[in-house]
Length: 68
Image 1 (cartoon, helix red, strand yellow):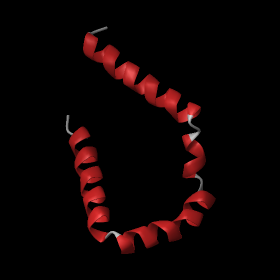
Image 2: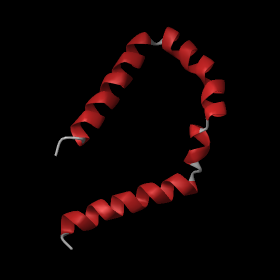
Image 3: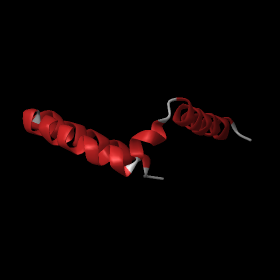
Image 4: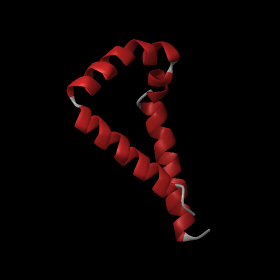
């Protein structure tokens, strides 16, 4: 196993450990997302520039990571 593969495996393992340790799955339940939708809309109305920059940054990161 190469060094690059070990690094990727370690990152995946760390992400999985953080997922369970911080109970991040509880934030992805439909009820939680629906209850926080009002807060998100309010924040977006107060900070349209930040919301656009956050969307752009996430978009660039996701598309950048998907390139082989």
